[in-house]
Length: 464
Image (tube, rainbow, N blue to C red):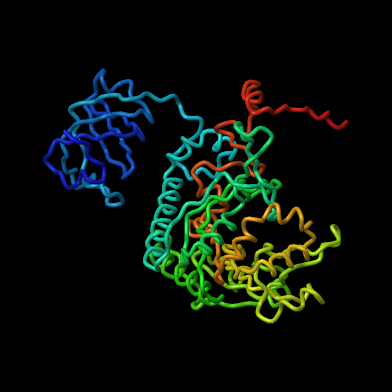
């Protein structure tokens, strides 16, 4: 007999079926015992005659049950769940796995439980209906996205996770190479250089659901690794890319509306220059809603015309507002020599309800201009050519004009799910200071591993 999912049981009235899942609740009524059985599809009521066989079974035990599907008496039907019109009259029980008493209640939303405890037992927290709903929503978002990009002619290409350490803004996570002692890989802050090289390679339309890893300072709603829709296009204008992303968001929101109830405030999306955003809202990720308490409205807006660089008084240098690969707007290049602070870039950010969801730009695609920007931001050119030589040389072999964007999957899912932070839509998140409480990471490695890698740990004396 094959397994039947709980929510398929109503189609099998009068049949004997086999169910497998977790015991959600147990209710004893004299000669009868009622179990609510939960699997990935839903929950169903099982009726047992009281016996030694059923006596030890408790909440969250994993069981296999065979029994006949019967209609419930009309007075006992529950129209709020899919299986509320039926129950299973059990004739066989097999205990597959016993469970200790859980460290917290999983039948609530879980907000009332200390987050550190929830993250320590994340595999139990995931059993929570809210968390499973969030992860399913994330799955639907990513599936829709892959289908949309495929229909638009994009090719999904994976780029390496072991790459080269280059200065791109945040600190790199580094990985020692055992077979090349004293040398290190870096985990990618983004696939930026690889996707530009794919444009040089003639791919023209690339995307991936990419992982980005950055060794940044602790912050409450920050993760050391995040997921983004990474995309790049050749022979395009700024408008082409913005229109593509906007069409994706509009169609995605409508696709997810039955699950989220979310609606878009206005379409097409509002457009605000960086200067206007700073003057009117005081920041570059404005919440343009008039009533910010309306949780079912998503107010998307584009912020454009960012400066290319800004002066760092602390470092006494020009720093990129986005990154060093952003193309200045046509006609602005001459200001790089005379007044860099006035150079307007092709950067565009998509914001929603006060959050930045996406940054993108057209890219520099000539070696001469890229080296000029590198010099402007204070890079030592000998070192820059050593670190970025692969990209600079590639631009000498016929690089097409290109640009792209990288909408954040975590934050977008958070907004659709109406959650307070991105940890609620990530299966196994880390704390704000980058710790994995469940796996106890980061952690020390053995002396044998250190020896293999030819590394030595030096302990720094604690400050008094």
